[in-house]
Image (tube, rainbow, N blue to C red; front, side, top):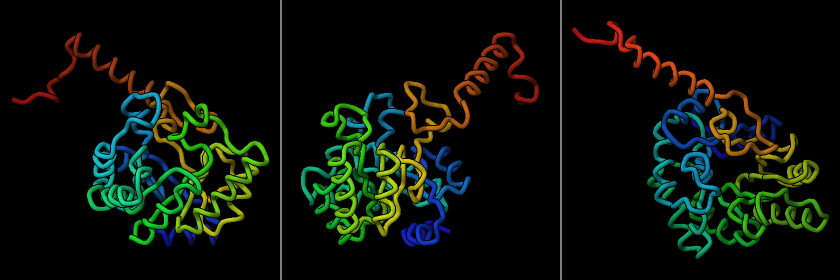
Length: 265
């Protein structure tokens, strides 16, 4: 059965953890969905882990729709959430609505995610009025890396923590149905979670959030440029895949592949 916004609320109320992972194509989305993960984020992280770019800023709306469409084809149960890329929602409310609607109409998503605090509250309100469920995102917001001076933990000072907590409440009031909390001290994430009626999804925000999200390529060991402190590598598929490819190369070169069982008569 398809996971909905109501299921997110129910899990928070019943103190059941929400699970979320990224996916960017049909086979990985199918795998994540079959594992029973609650939600799949088609993240702008595709820019880094699939396209090989150093940050998330260059990925376009058309590219995000392309990947969201592939994921939606594969998924039967998980909620699919499209990640609004840089400058797809910051220019105007009208453009933000148009682009968010594309994720729903063209991409097959059930919700969208966008980064930012109080400065995007009017956009969240407009999307909510247009019946587009919005997942907010506070703390470390990768699209703001130039202002933040890189991928750095946020909210360590009392003033910064107070502002993030206030942003979270403003976004809830604006209509967000859930909120990613990224790279903040665990104590701050715990305070945010306790202060909100909507679920929080942590990434580098400790264990007290209502759920957790990771980038799939970090979990599977498919991205080696760096591994954030908050990410856990559960398997090293690069090494497994590399071994298989080397074995294929050897068998082709020594003539053992293809064998009779791989040939037609």
